[in-house]
Length: 615
Image (tube, rainbow, N blue to C red):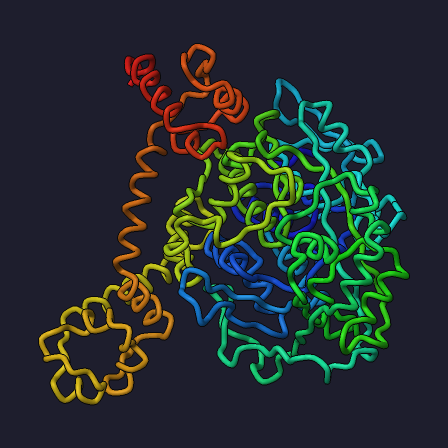
């Protein structure tokens, strides 16, 4: 039997890839080692977070599953950075580790054109440098026109606790022993990465009275643009804040050589922006304490996740470390923290479409590309699934630019800069973050989604209605001037000559105050977006001017058959990077480390001279 698309791996990237490829009409097969581990959450029990919550909303805007599954599966949700500017706000939900995978599996099982099969893929076969089939552990060969690898942390995975080194994936599952070696034989560069997870603590052994409560917001939220809140705001579960102390730090530093990382047992490179607790102490020696959170993992069992306490220390040292924390003096550790090493490919070997440069029709997404996090993986899986489907339809791929989405920033960073450590999305990575907000992901992306066929007509039309309402409200505010009496009620001393639109640019006036004396009949989300657009108009316009400059460089395409050796006076480092990455535009070339403005000018002149005849 032959499939249009095969997806290998049932994690967050694989779920999105398989669903969207099938939704777009492709006969799709999802192969996973254990169907019970589909959409598993081996690390933190949450969806979203700083920057990550924006990615989840982008996934939903493009037709993905993560947002609407999270909306059905969480027991606490809050808006992070709500007191800060709109560019850095994003949702984070405490997801139930039992119901989230269950709800995701239901979505997949109800997806037309999608089959799910248990098995382990050990190799691939190619013909004329195109993907032909996958080969399972038992020798079964299954043909496909496109393949998406979303193998997570299972490629030659090793679990490390102190000096213990055990072959296996998360939860002690079987690892993939041969696939990464076979990918290497086919021309892929393989690198070794590391991540980790903290302890799980038995609830009844925790003294919560010594910790600070962290509660959910008292305002209803959803990740998805298409669902209504389905949770009871009063029944949200609490999380708890606690801190390390001098005793904790002494225990860790006195036993640093016993850590798998500092004892020389780790060969992979760990994540800079999600370090182990021992790494934090070494790198931030001046900090007297580090923030930790206790988070419930599920309503169906009593394990709590000790956020921020990831380590690869031996079990006996972990006991001392945990017991040094206030409120955890008598804690019972049900699962010890560990580090996990695994193989990943060099992301410089993939295109912006996430198709491999090595083998046509082979796409990769998630931790195999060097990223870290459920949301980053899901975003890549969605784009890989969309582009595999578009390739089968002989259409141009969907390439999100840096001004389109955080997902666009993520992929551009990977394929342009590469990574030698697990990549994590941060708001600081997005230079156009003021226009890549959580509140406007549908406005930004649903036109793209509808054009490629990854959302329904109803979803598209709902977004058009939203745009229309925003325009109506903006026009009303521009054309309405308040009376002198209204200004007095708002404690504004201006004459009634200014419009409401102009008044809203003032820091002491907002739509909440306006509604106290002039009720607007527009949904809160519409009012929120319009107000942001007005108050930040100057900054937003500057951002768009910067985007325009970037897009001019992006429009100057670089032919893929260009011979950089023929271009004189380019710096040797730049030439090496250009030959390796083969950027598709001057814009992408400008973002390559080692390529300087002078190099770009030389390339631009060369392109004009050598390729102008073909224009």
